[in-house]
Image (cartoon, rainbow, N blue to C red):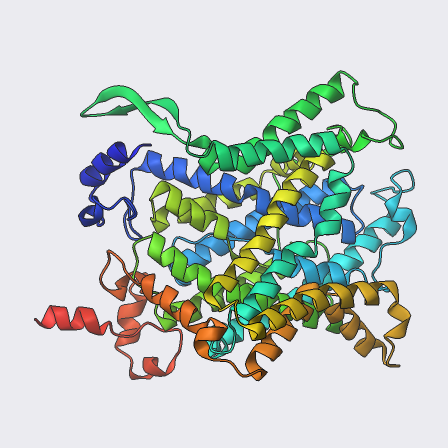
Length: 577
């Protein structure tokens, strides 16, 4: 929908951002606005499709560590479960958490330590599970193999997520952020993407021609054609039936980049152009490799806690997942400020940030209980969509949450996603993980990279985080203390690239002398202050719903609770005057 149509709609339906109509960088609909119902549905679907690529990638990668490469039916159930939980956590975050239009989904920060945990000798997949001819997905032996691994992962995620709940609701996140600067964030986030290069390479290498086609299309749509509009029919009371501009390449480039080669592979499959022998190169590009999942999958499923069995806890897993959760929390705090700016809200107050992190912890607890094999975090892809659409209404994100729950209950939907050819996924992963790596490095813009101190810290942290995990993976027998549990903890942590890089960056940045300006801490503070410019003057947007805030403010003990909203002094003074 073009700017003129959105402007007319905002006048008709009473947008609180009308004062900002002349500024094209301001949202047409702010946080508390409710767009027309048909516009809400369209935008909710768009947000779902934007999150699609990132969400389905997680269970598809995780299935390798869970020994589920050849069990497409269970893979489809994992996909349904992660969509269901993501929708549930989105509703909780928008309603009771930070209260911004911010989507919740799976996090790659937890994927890296999860794969490290599943690589320890006790949990490494037996060799026979790698051979499709030896795998009987209905046999009790195979079921026990993968359920043992996912229940261990579940329990570790649930215990580790308690840390996030405590850090959020206790207000500790504000204290921790004083010591976490760009030189900690940059290697941590970058290594999330870099550590997955092997998975991306293997999948892309299954048929390089298809992978290159996928990459080319995604690059073409997201970079070259993103500002190219397509005319679509529209109707308004003033202009009647007319054409309006729609930017599909800007909103869903990944989906389009996947769909076209996916269809191409389907045509090559039905005409038997691709080899039908699993031993031949290019076989994994066929769309019928996992075709039985679509037939066997139920139309409706209902994910529930403990669906894979009773969760168990691994000490090594808990410590590894905690490292991922800390990384996730750091990212989320930055996402809150960006989301507030793009949705026309004031700078998030401390109580809202505390509540947001705490609710994300509850979300990870739920994700662990339901068995997604992952946690939840704020989805930065959807925050970028707010900037594109200029619609920052949390009603839209709330509707997206319900839409994701519905999609998570449709078993055939999850099964369809498992038929995406392996090289198509490989092409998408090369783009996606590359962007994640670059996004981490972009945090260095706030530091003084002419400083030899900063160059040393970043370079040493990054290189060590590649060398140490690689060496321990090749020579695991050297890391033996005599205590099995300690060995597992050390192996999991030291083979998790982002933990090694983040820990070294954190330690060196806080011990080697340097000014706040040099370290980039002032740059981050300045950015957050700039994000505080908004169209909604008070912090009432962050108040809890259903009259909860009014009740809490009448209680004297509220000022001691870090996640409870307090009296907005600005609005109080305005009311007095």
